[in-house]
Structure formats: C-alpha cells, structure tokens
Length: 328
Image (cartoon, rainbow, N blue to C red; front, side, top):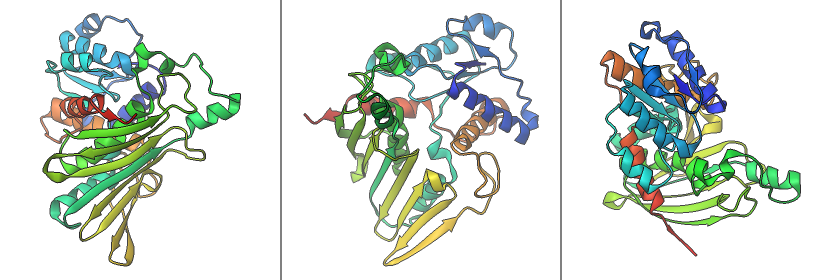
C-alpha cells in the first residue's frame, strides 16, 4: 500500500514494479494507493503480508509511521525525512516495525564503492568528506514571478513541511551520505542559512553546514535550491591521505580518483545493484529506491539480511539537524 499518489508515490510504485521483475519470487502485488485519512487498521485486515509505503508531505510522515506500526504492518518504507521536529522524533523512538527510509543516494553504486574503499583503507586516513546538493527551483520560481512568490505549494505550510525546506528536503540526503561514509549518524552540526528567493518565510533556500563526528571525523558542504543553472547536482568528495575520490549523481557510473598529481576514472562494470541495468543505462535516482525496497523486502519477508537506511539512523541524524547551531 502506498500513502500518497504524487511524484514520490509514483516513484515508489515504479521501484516496486522493477523489484518484482527482477525478483518474481517476491510476488509483489499491484500497489493500492491510499488517500489521506484512510484507516490503516482496516486496510491491514485484508492483507496477508503487508508493506506500507509513505509518500505524503514531510510533516505527516511521523503520524503515518506510528499508525502503520500500531496497525501491525510487517514493514514500512518511508520517504525522507521521517519527521520534522523533536516532538515527532521522540514519539518515533518506540516504533518496532522494520522501517526503511528512502535515502537513495547512499545506496547507489558510487557511494557503496567509496564506503568499501574507506573500510579497506585504500584512501588512507580520511581527512574530511565534503559535498554539495544544488538545485535551481527557488531561483527559477523567483525569476518567473519577478519576486519570491507564495503559492499553494504544500511546502509553504509549516504543518506539512516543517520549519525548513532546503535543509530537511535536500540536506537530509547529503548529510546522510556523509554520515554513512564515516560510519556514524551522531554528528554535531553548525550552519548558516539564507532565505533569499524563498517561496515562504520559513523556507530556507541556501544552507552551508559543518559537521563534527566521533573520532575526529569531519564533514562540510552546501545545499541549495537557488543556485542558478543547477540541475539535480549531488556531489560527494572523500579527501584521504592517500587518495581522493569523487562521485556525482549526474555521472552515476563513475568515481573520479586522484593520487598525487594523477587522475583516473573508475567505471562501474557490474549490474548487481538497483535496476541491474548495464553501466550508463540506469534509471536515475530510482536506482536507490529500487535497491532499498529490495533490501527491505528481502530482509523482512525472506529472512535475507541485507541492510538498508534504517529509521533509527534517520532519527539520530535528524536529532543532530534539529539541534544545529545556526550562525546569526
């Protein structure tokens, strides 16, 4: 069942359809799209094995997770973030149902390979991990109207979106990837944010952050919806004492490596992740959705432990994000 029929809900449905093609033994049925306000307890009664997928506005995720947990669903697949404030976060600590959060970027080939490189010591001592996630949606909207425009977009409603936009919407992906590579989801964060070109007063449009993690690990980066000319630019750089590694979503099947003055490119050669398409023939960010859905289903319904971005990892990171020390 999928709660939410917008772009995220459709993306989840597409991802599940591809998982079913690749793994027909899972016997995934056609999704049932639920409308907001549907009784999950009633819907659950008619299902033998049940996966509940959440793709409604951010501020409603926590409520949906809690209701699905009470209704007895076997597993939950939720868009990020799991919640939008500390009050919701504390309530989610009691959830027992296996819950995966759709941090798709870290499950793609590039970050997964870089994680193995780090663990094997190939890059040496990690000095810092830095990145950026830039889009141009706020800049485009401001230009089209001549000034920042408040519309009926649900992200303009604090109850539905939380008290942040760029930081919670895009930033969760980048900070999650950095934490995943470092192996810790409990950073201390300092940041600065701008609201220029924002669609509503609470919607930050550009954010810079600095992270301090256990054992001296560090992260740094910027997140934006107002960088003119930016497509969906997600980039992560691992700076090590022996080597440097960079992965960009727009070149998802390449990792750029530096060693001394030399530069090389590692190209994906396998088809064992996401859609299992040939290199350079993937399906964009759906690759992460597919991989996470596969891992959750394999682990919960087929007793095949695989690991996926978990609810607890997301809650640990979100606690740090909600406690960010913001510069004046």
